[in-house]
Image (cartoon, rainbow, N blue to C red; front, side, top):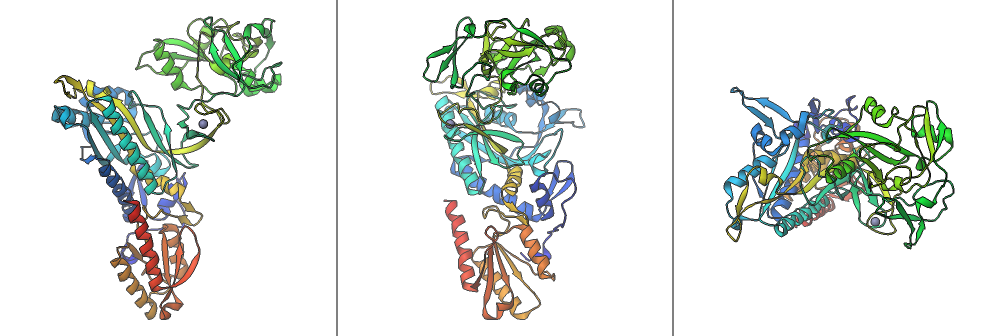
Length: 614
Ligand SMILES: [Zn+2]
């Protein structure tokens, strides 16, 4: 491709609204342009990179036995009403009406469409297993589209769906997709982790993994173990505290909270399992009232009382299914609402469709006797969920349930019920790994690139997708669904692969492999060598961008750095001797080589890409 003919509008400055590096660079380097908030045009270079990603994804999907199809973006609303997602999605769903006033949606994903299709076309287990996929545009009316392609309202996605007659079949289909995903992200040169995740709006039983690209601009937090391969989304990660609390009088030995007795009292044991302290034997005095005028937050309390946040218990009131629910966690921990809601559902205190919402100040006053900031766990009627680390604090400071007062010497299990304990908090940096004995959790930011779920029969039951099993019995098919954000992947790659001068594409994603730059295209010997290289490298199968523009060398080099093509070949003064200068965009080292040597290097790069595809 000749650069003089290419629509490749580079910019010196990023447009003002760019919040993420990838967003700024992809615009500056002429890959994308914004049409409206969260909606982008892919310019020729951007389209080429997308195609590279799509090609690798297609190859790996086919290798895993999946078949490509293409479903409509425009879907009748009834399908989503049948599955229940019409209401679950809320305002994120683009809804519209046709001229006959029939309701439609722009597909945010395609579970309903594919389930209806499978239900209609598959009637026997003999046609299973079957995995179908498409690469298609999706729509989500994000409240706050941002970070360019990382959170858009219209985006490109690969979505695959597997159908099986039984659990072992589903597990095999799921494993095949996991393998394909690892191959895809490795081939595309991304740094990623496969993490345990929360099922979210798509829902379903059984396994779910997220594939996260590690990047500082990521909106998701991943907890990774320093010692084993445990990694989980913060929503899901289980952290275990090293010490039950930092109360006065407690020693510095390591404790773990092992079990709860029937009465709900906590038994603390040493690492060896020996009972160490029972809460009933800890501070004998009753809770004492502290006057804490205007002190509402944990930070204010630690300052005012000179104590650590770990010895404070915060009590937060929620509503779920029309009832008030109090949750108690340590002052240095954050409540995990997903874990709370899951437990409420398991205890029969909330339904599947219920949401957990923060209670209004009026309700807090009514239930706890104090405004927010002074609420405490003592005397609360109704469900009280106590985080296991909070239950292990031996003498805590809590709200007094009376404005301007707190209590000290509060003993969980003695002064308030710890009948319902569990993991109700977010994992925190430094927590013990839930899987291995010696690892600690560290937090990294990540960008979700892919998500795989075992859906089970969630959709097939609601949409009537069943078929006959080997005994001739009608059974709902077991499904899995597997997504990859293709346009987001482009941005994630840019987040991971850039320097201060511009993009540094991994070879598999780069729009071209070689950027051929004559210092002066008017110089006869330079032009001759450049044209000769252009044809010979193209004949090797390389994609070559030839900068034949009538621009100053400085401008050409700056643009080349910005665009980020892996190999740069500069033809200058030494052209008459057949010598060129080769630079790897990722390494930056310049070498002077003969034209033949340069061709060999290009051939090696192509060979590397070919081997990755095997
Ligand atoms: Zn571990």
